[in-house]
Length: 93
Image (tube, rainbow, N blue to C red; front, top):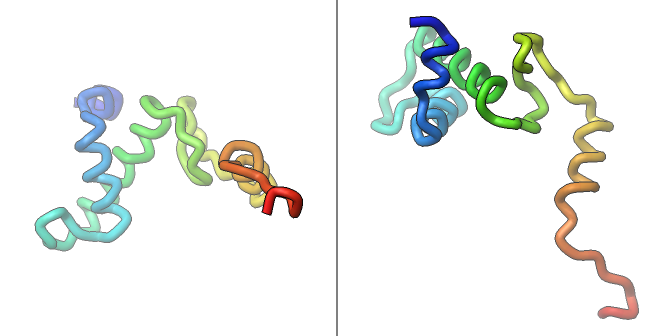
């Protein structure tokens, strides 16, 4: 089975479990990932982000297989533009 087929077969739930396992280094049951499992899981997570998600993660793999790393400036702009919930002035307080 090739990587594209594996990625297309992943459910969102499986993706989240793999992502969590890579982040913390353990499976849900507490068993540590081997180095081979970690590397394989990381490849699947990055491929899923590139092929399935419209990810705005600071580090990901684009659909063409190239690594995408956002600068601090780009991340700040995203945060400032997309995550504003409310803005208050002194008159509002």
